[in-house]
Image (cartoon, rainbow, N blue to C red):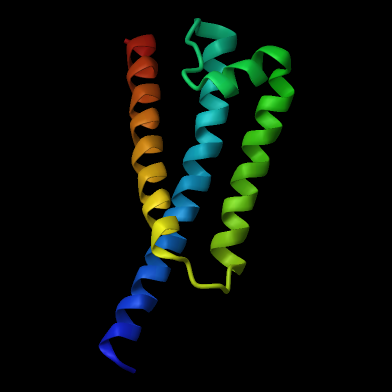
Length: 113
């Protein structure tokens, strides 16, 4: 096996782990956002998701669940190579969701203190 194939194999494994991470964070984001909006007057910052939530909280949770399952499926069953532009998008999404999770952690901390 050549060095370039080893590097590519490592990159693909990393992307798959990040997709699982994104699926978990997406699901937590949906649950915490639902809980926060219902009980503590936080608001959804994503205008599209806010609109969906206002029209149907069940649809909001269902979409979050579906997207998480999709990410898990791609991570576990995906057999096609992931192109570099897509991997950059995955890295950005992981960064953005990590920030969102930190924001959730802050409001939960202030709620408990």
